[in-house]
Length: 120
Image (cartoon, rainbow, N blue to C red; front, side):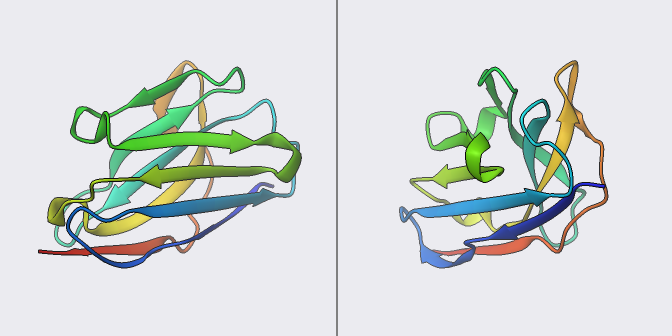
C-alpha cells in the first residue's frame, strides 16, 4: 500500500514561491504517474498537475507557466514548485498516484495534505 506524506506548505505573500514535496513509501514508486490536487475552503478538490513515469507533465490552465511538477524516483518523491503565487492558489495541497491514462483519477487514499496560504 502506497503511503503519501506532503510537506512544504506555508504562508506567503502574493508573488512569492513555495516548493511542495510528496514522499511516497510502501511500494515501487517509479511506474506510477503522480499528481497534485488542491482543495480550497468551500470548494471541491481539483486537479493541479501530473507527471508520468516517463516525465511527461500536464497542468491545469490556471497554473500553467507558474507551477512546475517534477519527480525524483531515487527518493520516491514528487515536487511542486509554485512561483508567482496568487491568493486564489490558497488551498490544502495533496498528492496522489494516478493512472497515466487518467491523470485526474486518484488511485490511493489521501494523505493529510499541506496548507498553502497566499496573502494579498
